[in-house]
Amino acid sequence: MAELWFVGLGLGDERGLSGRAVEILASSEVLAEEYTAVAPAGTLDRLRAAIGRPVRTLDRGALESEAPVLEALARTPRVALLVVGDPFAATTHVALRLAAERAGHTWHYLPNASILTAAPGFLGLMHYRFGRPVSLPLPAPGFEPRSPIDGIAGNRGRGLHTLVLLDLDPASGRFLGAGEALGILRERDRDGRVLPDDAPVAVAARVGRDDAAGFFGRFDRLRARDFGPPLHVVVVPAPELHFEEAGALERFRCD
Image 1 (cartoon, rainbow, N blue to C red):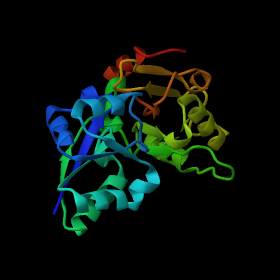
Image 2 (tube, helix red, strand yellow; image 1 turned 180 degrees about the horizontal axis):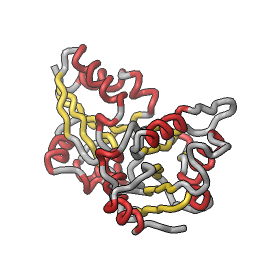
Image 3 (cartoon, rainbow, N blue to C red; image 1 turned 90 degrees about the vertical axis):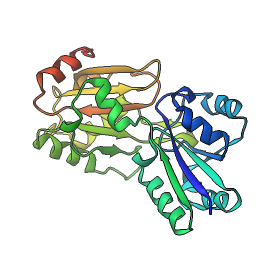
Image 4 (cartoon, helix red, strand yellow; image 1 turned 180 degrees about the vertical axis):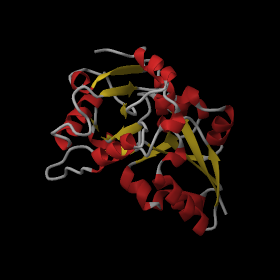
């Protein structure tokens, strides 16, 4: 039976790979997915040149079908799935791990940085003070879920921060930016009961890259800002901050 290696790329480019990860990629059939996040432009091309092997990208449908990965495992002794961020931050990859086990294959895990921990760290917020993350989908006609607002309200009610993950569709070039995301949150919370105009919010943009940037200020004022190229995440801080958290966020105040 074959080996399936889940290799985390981290939040930057190919330079964020460990030496062990490069060794595995150079001796494997390499598949890469970029639907949960995307690597900086040119990353995969430079990686192909560095390891001397092709890197085949999979879209969401192909990866969720599991077929391309299982077919690769059937024809080669080692397959590496390269994932932006950390592989097991996405439940799709856990499902793929289980599918490989059912087919009689073994799997191995090379973790890397995840936005789940990197964004709080970048902003200076304490990880153990975060509640359940929420995901904000791209807008679509007739689709206006309140679950993100309800999740933020629940976390704030328990005195916890909320990480708001923003949707993307790389195949169509669509990325939900933080400004648009704040506008959507206002549409779902029109009376401002959960997020009044003066509520403090933070944005972390392009974490792990050379042009990473943070922003902190009032909800109504950050809605109008340009946060630059993707990827972005929004953080809604708890109603009360530890003094060290407050000091760290002030570094990013922009209102």
